[in-house]
Amino acid sequence: MIGPGSADICYATSNRQNAIRRVAIEADVVLVVGSQNSANSRRLVDVTEREGVPAYLVGDVGEVDMRWLAGADTVGISAGASAPPTLVDELTQALSGLGPTTVGVRSVGAETISFHLPKELRRPAK
Image 1 (cartoon, rainbow, N blue to C red):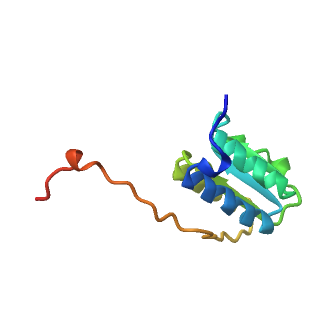
Image 2: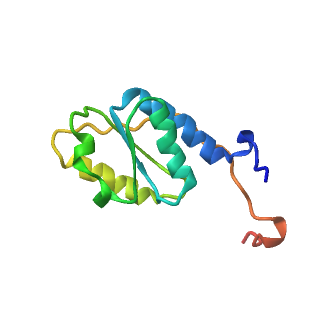
């Protein structure tokens, strides 16, 4: 069986992989929020580790092992494409509760693609 080429991955996946490479440059450790069965989330961990930075996939804040953070000055946080943003917010809040913390957001790319309903499914404007 021949699967799609690497150039065929969706833009959201590609953007996240490029973004995680940039995050890894600044981080001592990276936490990726996502499901264990999410290929996209697992790939973000792989990409980070290939950059030489330890990375861990967590489904929620309760799965974080504090030993992973020992000695880390900078913790990068990312998420798989299907991870709810609230989980990232909860993880950020939990890490902020560990002591003096500075939270920085890195915008490394804008997703400019939008999808519209087919004309037949759109409601008429009022």
